[in-house]
Image (cartoon, rainbow, N blue to C red; front, side):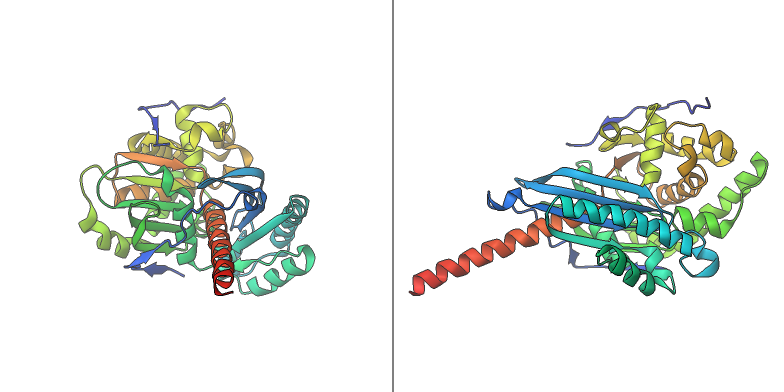
Length: 373
């Protein structure tokens, strides 16, 4: 079995192109505890991305929540999108099949409130609206195609709690299948303030398909990897220039994506993926760069034999490595925080918070009416 040596040390943390200088923006939703009776209700979040379909069902628990059901399936909705501009019939069939499973779980769990979102693949596809309608008709799920800014906001809301303590702005990123979001935040309780953000249409699927097949030897694979890196770096050039003045000693960086969790698993030399070992891990950035460099010149069969990569990620992980290295160039933190959480958790926090505020408002209105009487 092929292996990547573990290097450095690690610890756990405390506990198309769109750009948006989002000065003055904040995440708005704040964790609010529901009344006891209401806390038994279930809430759900569906995130249909370019590569994966994910569901999370949870119940509130104080200012947090407890997951009671989950589902994840690789659907590759964006497969072929870079070449055709459309979602293929096969990709849509895979996604609808996964969403049928989600729909059944929602019914079984008697979910009170749910939010279902679709991201870059549906934003870009010329037949995205037709697909959304098909999903509604065949599964009953109403997908909301969210903007890149909303995608970035939800990712931050879902994982910022894992950011290391420190002084000054920090960067949180989300490498998806069809896009990558970078967000500069000013941490603060209970939610951080967004100083700037940018989304580029390069994710592990879109970048892989745009650059094309890998070569048959290490030199050609390395050249392909460098081309990937340059495409991403060029797309983020404006953002990199804008955030350069915010670079201070002891930079903090937190990533949420299959790329960072996979590389973190290789860093730990795990025989199989273990979310408890990875979520909240802090890894030396040089270790991640070293793993990325090694993967970039490996052949596909060699990558498939690596634990935590396998068939599903073997052809996409190299693009993720190129994106990650470009991010590390922009924000050269010595340590990288790893989050196995993001958009779904952000959605759940928003739903629970909004519901709690609504319940509190109704209770206040009832008290006011009683006083008037």
